[in-house]
Image (cartoon, rainbow, N blue to C red; front, top):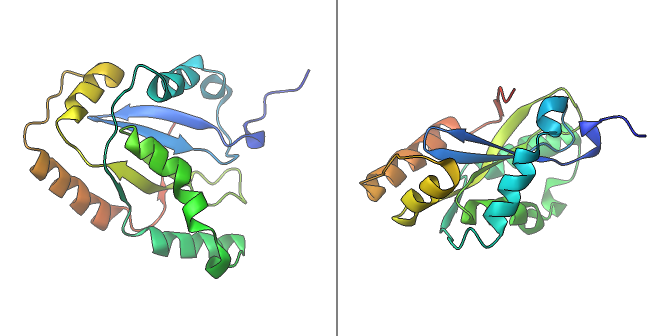
Length: 169
């Protein structure tokens, strides 16, 4: 029987942070066994992509993503000009359309490096309160969607301009 090894998987894990559900693509990073084997991640992914979620959100792509991907290309020694950006963005945009803030692990050539970068995120609207209630079991109600989006966009512009070392575990 094969031993547990998170390095063999681009595993999707999820967390709830304040009024956001966050998706992380682990890209073969070292994930603790307790998280890797936790069925809640698979259940939430199935719920989000299944009949329980009929919601769809407009999305934004991190305006700093181009610079982050250049850093990633330099670190991993691939040709940035030949990089298929559209294919890369596909799953992250898919999660953002479901209502999640979607992150990717930046430096996949080092299993211990747990730096992530924000790829895509939802535009907050009146459906987001329903989303939070349904999937985050949250009673938080966002009242001013324009203000919420302005704050989020400013935070993204200022704070997500480089990979962040996230403490997921």
